[in-house]
Length: 120
Image (cartoon, rainbow, N blue to C red):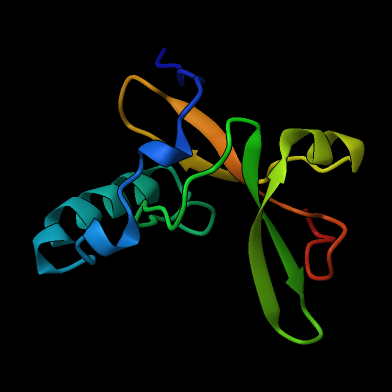
């Protein structure tokens, strides 16, 4: 049985958005293979693909927190301390899955108390 290796992934190790090529035709074969795997496991409505990148460096004790206001249809992502998550009972919901030796780690989370996230 294959297991996910859960290990720390340094968000700062991601390339800056200005240095990341956009998804294009050259990615079509890879993305189709990913889609086929998701279809095989009935997970196309649960998982997707994201172009990994950074905009700025995070501190060693920081994670990115997404908050949503469904009424105004706005979303914000901001760095917060891991302590802030614990103090406010926030559990990371978004997962960045790395397909290398670093395995899987959650470094971006959604605040379930912000409007639009009560379903989590």
